[in-house]
Amino acid sequence: MTDLGFDRPLYILPFDHRGSFQSGLFGWKGTLTSEQTARVAASKAIIYEGLLAAVAGGVPQARAGILVDEQFGAAILRDARARGFLTAAPAEKSGQHEFDFEYGDDYARHIEAFSPTFCKVLVRYNPEGDAEMNRRQAARLRHLSEYLHRTRRKFMFELLVPAERAELEELHGDQHAYDRSRRPRHMVDAIHELQDAGVEPDIWKIEGLDRTEDCAAVVAAARRAGRAGVGCIVLGRGEDEAKVEAWLSTAAGVPGFIGFAVGRTTFWDALVGWRDGRTTREAAVTEVARRYTRWCHLFAERATER
Image (cartoon, rainbow, N blue to C red; front, top):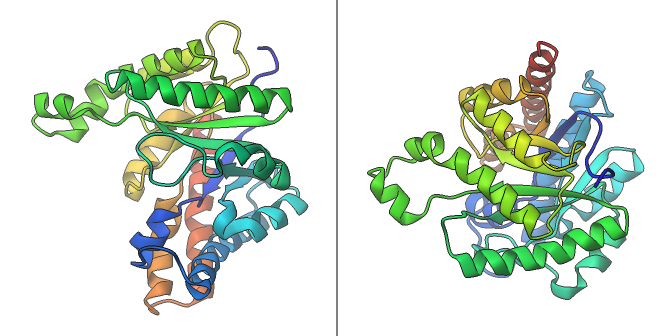
């Protein structure tokens, strides 16, 4: 396992959202027309140009990366790779409760066509949840993990640990209480279970944690038993700017957290303004660049204080 991991800071701008763009941003259901598909792709081009603007403004290109889907972002993936950026592309079906491949058994051909730096999966996995579903997910993920390492590709694993209904009922529906009192332990247990099932990410993409000790416990789990090079990055979960800043600040102070992947908090407001005609395309690009740059500076400053 000595070749696992990634050895430099990783400041990802993720915009591989599919269902949330179609229905959440534009209110479209079902199969999209070519015009609707082009409109979604145009919104993603704004985000990408925001990243390019941030790098032109001083964000180190070696740390900057994008996570975007093939469906709406194929041209962006190709352009970013040609420019030497870190790239990541998702392998999962969008909006599924249980992990499965977007392109079924044909997943390898799609990965090879775009050759991203990272193949990314989003997985909902609560160790207290449906044991059979967890086993099914782990089996699929092991196949992917083995393929990626066999072909010397990097594996990014976005771990979401949603509360089980019974857990939330015990906590009187208090999501914040779950996030503080139960989710951190579940995350560690989930990482252990997935590793034991043969799933070996290079990067764990982790929901924000409020406490330094919880971040340290997640890193210890990610790096246990010879996995010293494995890194963690913190995601934004669509929270407001203050919450994202708090999560980034906490994670950046912990060795092993090498960066972040903050998406909706970076771009959503700008895209809504553009969609509604309240702001120009150029202004939307500038706002994406501003917020992304802010996260980069915050993480870098806090990390140097370790």
